[in-house]
Amino acid sequence: MGLPELLATLLVVAVCGLLMAGYPVAFTLGGTALAFAVLGEATGVMRFSLLGALPPRVFGVMTNEVLLAIPLFILMGVMLERSRIAEELLETMGRAFGRLTGGLAISVTLVGVLLAAAKGVVGATVVTMGLISLPAMLRHGYNPRLAAGTVAATGTLAQIMPPATVLVLLGDQLNTAYQAAQLAQGKFAPDQVSVSDLFAGAVIPALALVGLYLAFQIGVALLRPHACPAIRREPDAPTGVALIRRLADALVAPLALIIVVLGSILGGLATPTEAAAVGAFGAILLTARKAAPTRSAPVTLAILAAAGLLVLHHVADLRVGRADASAWDDAAVAAAFVLLAALAYGAAAAIATVAREKILQPALAATTQITAMIFTILIGATMFSLVFRGLGGDDMVQRALGDLPGGVAGALLIVMVAMFLLGFVMDAFEIIFVVVPIVAPPLLRMPGVDPVWLGILMAMNLQTSYLHPPLGPTLFYLRGVAPPQVKTLDIYIGVIPFVLIQLGMLVVLWFRPGLATWLPHLLAGG
Image 1: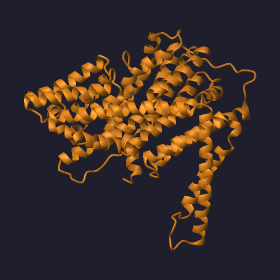
Image 2 (image 1 turned 90 degrees about the horizontal axis):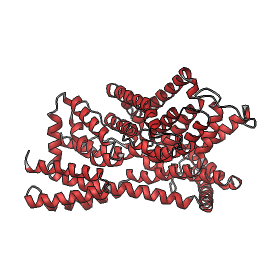
Image 3 (image 1 turned 180 degrees about the vertical axis):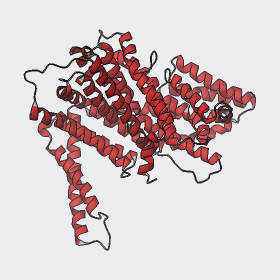
Image 4 (image 1 turned 90 degrees about the vertical axis):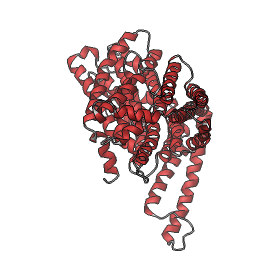
């Protein structure tokens, strides 16, 4: 090993050591990289002028349209969380299924799926589910281990369920790595892999994983009914048509929002950023409607106006200033302006409502905090990646992976194991920004490695490491909000069946790449 490779290796070791010691991630990445850049200049193995490429790279990050979806999806999740829609969903679903043995666990899983799709951030989903679901399950006599395992596993679905924030960041990094791999192979008109491709690739594996969770819970209900007893019906609880109406009221609005967001992305009607804007706007409307139901007329007007604009867009040409416009087109354009005015009025009223109810400011503050954290890590990781490549680390990784026994499968297995172990001590965002740019280009140069399949494998792998005892971050999130009667050992033992389910799903995905690639190819017409 030459001096450049030695410095590149020491750079990675130093970063991992400092992160484990608890130093801030973004400043550790950037500061350590800067120190090794100075060391590289002093030893003559790297030119310090290479850092002149950092400002254009940072500017590229900040102007990346795909990454604009991050704060919008986060705002969507925070708004839905603070509107208390999740609590209403769980209560209503619990009444609908709770009279069945294991029904409350099934309800928690189904609500968790909706929250995962709405929030897109594991920590927020686990904390919300832990505060709402876990006490309810314990109160109704559920085994603490089953209850804790169900909540923890359901919360980690935010790692793989579109539109997960992790998938947005992973899609952006994989696209860069995929293009770099193709350029290295002499293909100067490279193909791209988009965030929409990763969303489509994650749908079937995520739903299959949910199906396995439900199958396990049904099995427990059949074999150990005392661990998940049915809920006794309260005398004043709604039944029949009243329960169906209440379930529809609680379920239809958030479900419709998620379908609109994902449907527009998967159907090619909108980019992830555009769909995220629609999701954030819809979440504000739903929050205003929930916070002040007696003053919801402007919100209803805005929803109807938005629906009317969609219909007009499909039945008429709304471009203005056309010489060949018909009378019908002119009338449609005039109607569109009226609907836009109604939409603007409803949006202004909704924003005023959530501000009056003291929801808007905390939601914006939380969104800003999370977004700033992600982008600060990304800038630090950009510095790290630049210095690592300047020291020749990318060539070293390429040679190391190529020399591993087992060829492509051996290299991929080593990377998956490394990412799994790193998931114990590093956040998914850190792994995506630090590890993926290093290992993805050489992996994507190897024959038979599809970028969408690789991305979903990585996402599901990180999801499993998030849940795995003893250091999975999800376990610590849940421990922080769990009632005192739930012991740490209960949480650790409770998640083991779900970890085994996730590992089994990961193995199936390894041998059946079509689970991740079929839907993207279908939507692309391939």
